[in-house]
Amino acid sequence: MFEGVYTALVTPFDEDGRIDEDTLAMLVDRQIEGGVQGLVPMGTTGESPTLDHEEHIRIIRLVAEHCGGRVPVIAGTGSNSTAEAIALSRRAGEAGATATLHVAPYYNKPTQEGLYRHYRKIAEETEIPIVVYNIPGRTGRNIENSTMLRLAEHARIAAVKDATGNLAQLMNLIQSKPDRFVVLSGDDNLTLPMITLGARGVISVASNLVPEAVSRFVGLALKGSIGKAREEHYRLLPLFEALFIETNPIPIKAAMALSGLIKETYRLPMCPLSAENRARLVQVLEKLELL
Image (tube, rainbow, N blue to C red; front, side, top):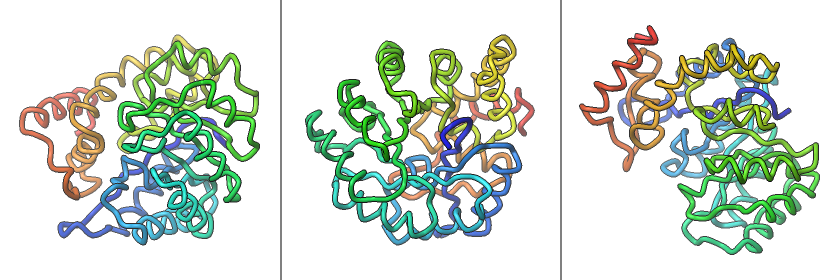
């Protein structure tokens, strides 16, 4: 299941900040037609912190039903409360999710043993595969390789989305992990080096805007066409970088709005891109002929 491009879907809102279901369905179709291997609703890119639990499940259900089994759906159901993560994961499975994605508990910063027990408990109490999400820049806690390898022993813990930016840690993990445990990039700009080191794909922000281009790029890398993949990497690199000039998902939603795909509506505390950064983003989009 876990190979290729999985798009970390944005959540489109109307002018009043309500979920735009018609646009969401259109985005799902556009992603699948663009060749991605799966969809990831209700991650940080989907503004999950500002949607309530009922909205989470509604979006997961809408995405799963509109997919109709065409691609897997990995639902973001992570929490810094283990009980809450279990409850959300169970409901996501009932709503049609194929797997769940769990960010490391944030702010309360558990110990490595606490992290292990958190994920292990979720795996024991739910029935679909789990993807661990390691992003210490947001959570304040790195899941160390010794912990990750313990987690990889559980049959239901299937993969990790690695957004540590630490290639030394990544290499040691790939060298030591069981074959069945998959590593996915959590950063578009590090996808090529991570695949060359043994990762099997990416959970991508950029593919919201350019699913065909990211799918082609990752496909080349996975096939071992590294020269051609490198050309695509450097062609897309300005976009990868521009999409993080402010906090995700502000730039990707701005880019999609500029391209006419969604309305540029956020829920506070997310707010529109600054004028200076908008000009920089427009410049990159124009150079890539996306406007």
